[in-house]
Image 1 (cartoon, rainbow, N blue to C red):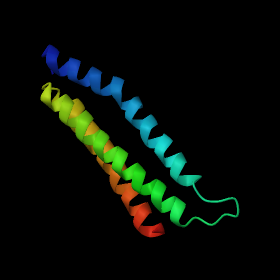
Image 2: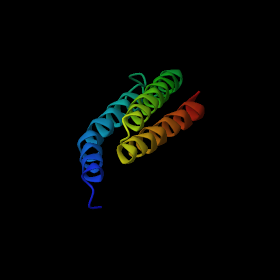
Image 3: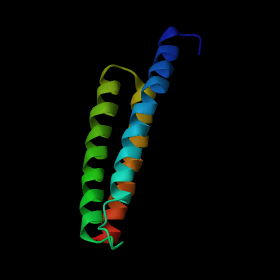
Amino acid sequence: MRRLSVWVDLGIAVALLPVSAMLVVWLGVHVLFSGDDFGSSGIQTAQAARRGAWISGCAAVLAGGGLMGLRLWIAGALHLVVLGAAAVLFAAAAAQHG
């Protein structure tokens, strides 16, 4: 932990984590409030959840892979885990409602 590159990697991970968390929360709110006015959450929720899974999966590959390509291993792995878990969560919601 004495090397500068590890601290830079951790700093970038901490700086970019709120951006990924805000994306997941925004997609989650979109899925949560995607039903119609009468409270039924059928096909609209499934479509919103599929869209959320697709967006968070692509963001996981782009952010995690891009950071790992820049040799920022900790930040890349953290974003792969966070956004990959969100993709699995949204895919489960799509399977449940659709």
